[in-house]
Length: 128
Image (cartoon, rainbow, N blue to C red; front, side, top):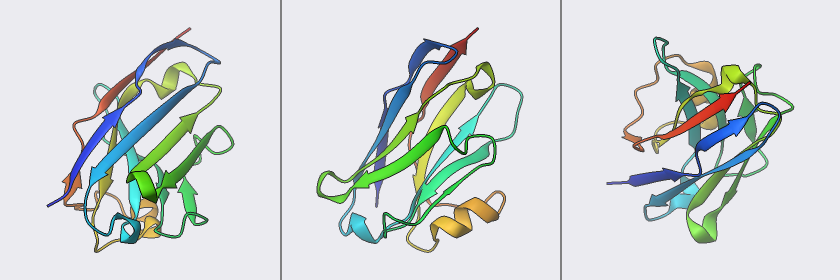
């Protein structure tokens, strides 16, 4: 069983930054790929970014490339999503998710991947 807890969301103005955290309670966390997803009101949940157990292997949605970075600190069982140059259209609930069966590439390329573990989400609101 893996528990994920996100934090770091909030209300910011366009152009500002936020750093989201996802803390996992899992043995061998360094063997899990972790993804960030988001869901805006009235929209489907969409992939944002993912990182493999190898922290050098990352994937990003086209809409956030060059603005968001994903990193991990396995000693702290934590994955971070640094979001810069935020836009109004980034407004959504952000979720982290993981599943030992899937890689970061899977999370990036397969729609509606049935990941086993999800956090409760953290709200990000970007005002103009």
